[in-house]
Length: 201
Image (cartoon, rainbow, N blue to C red; front, side, top):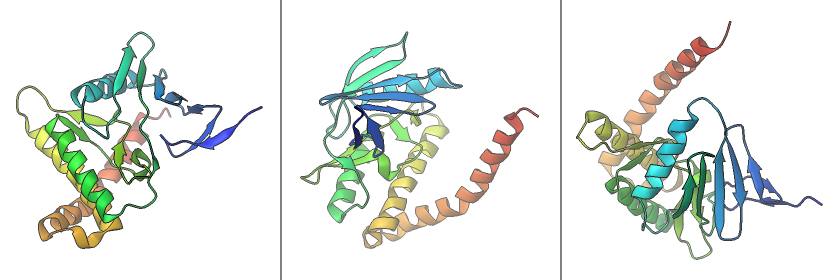
């Protein structure tokens, strides 16, 4: 008999502890989550990025702990964080998330986005963050793209502030949000255009 529950890790429906997309297969246990990367374009990079990101952030509260990795099968087993995917964020949640993001950046990991589904909040209001396959890792030598990656991460953080608790933003943070909003539309069009060029005729 199949049992369906709402995933505390993904916020989506899980059947018998399994959640599957075209790119990954998640096996969600009581204490850990096993993430298998399927054979898709870019799979090696996404697997490597998440593995290295979790290694860099080891010991940061609110980040899954990498238990083991198996490169041959592209498996990452990590600790399961308590909580459920956020649907709304309080002032306290956002302040904690901001502190967590700064620790993440200090560890050399910048995220390309911060969707609510990747933000977990437990019954005590503690905030966690999952899913790091779409990240930029700080290189050994300084490069300008790392500064851009940090700005993108902070834009997505402040965008959440603007949507959830706008009174918390200062003028400088609002400026970054507004700049990001102006840039998002052309960037989205560019990505859509380049994606269409890759499609077979």
